[in-house]
Length: 202
Image 1 (cartoon, rainbow, N blue to C red):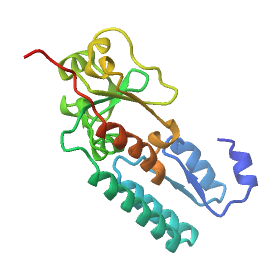
Image 2 (spheres, rainbow, N blue to C red; image 1 turned 90 degrees about the vertical axis):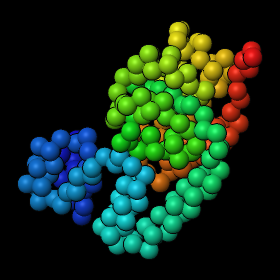
Image 3 (tube, helix red, strand yellow; image 1 turned 90 degrees about the horizontal axis):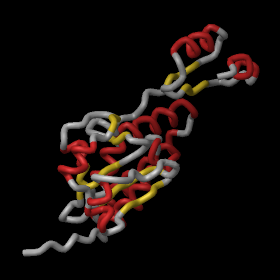
Image 4 (cartoon, rainbow, N blue to C red; image 1 turned 60 degrees about the vertical axis):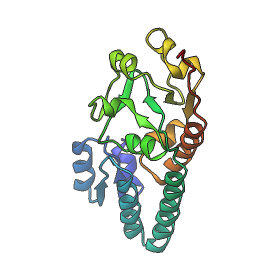
């Protein structure tokens, strides 16, 4: 953050993402600015809470209520379209995955997926253990744009790879807890509804 430039803009309010160090926030406040440091949302509910808060900050409560209403309506539609037989999903980004206690996990499960990492006890954002992949055999692999797909075993033998069931979603929209996360959720929902099964000998 270029503190001098921020101060020179004379803003009425500074919204600092959670990645901004507390030292920088303190320096901006010492310069006479009103600074609100935004915590990183770990649930879909945190999105509407943040929108309402920003609406109050900016005197746009009605607009915030409209945005939240549209967001919640989209979530209800996505939930209603979730497949009854939820496919096993591996969310993969640069060798990491998303476990329970994250809004991306909620996005995957709300869209109708069964998060193999969370089912294996993974919490937060952690490296994806290949033993989990081998044991849980994902039917879908979802990745944000920019992250390469994993390769080699055990990935090549998963149902997801055998059937070509991989999905790339918008990196900006899936990585930030904001109302537009519904777009990649809709992408996942449509994909999960079309899940194919690997034929096995009986």
